Length: 147
Image 1 (cartoon, rainbow, N blue to C red):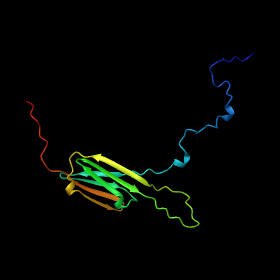
Image 2: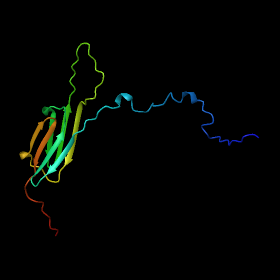
Image 3: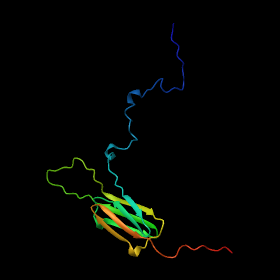
Image 4: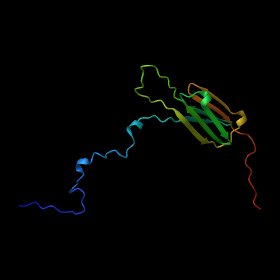
């Protein structure tokens, strides 16, 4: 007896003239392999609070303290840094693999209270930026009476 098969005129699998070329375009719209495993540097931080002060510890390894900038605007704190790759090539030497990051990074965060910029302090040691941000003492927010 003959085997019966269902015929589907819209099926793309029945006859594929490009079946031999299916791998030709494979990966065409995929991220290039030379960008894989490139480290993306991030500023990681710890934030602590007591009654009068915020304390921030931010990891920014491999950056000189001259290349770090901290901006305070009320209760908004922004940290930015720039890491530069030093290119020192010796004769007969070639780079086989490089993973160290170079470029600009930034991180901003908002605190619950305004910061007293005049008393704020920053130190940088062993790749860790420490910010001491005193809370601004002043008038508490006043409520408006509605007439």
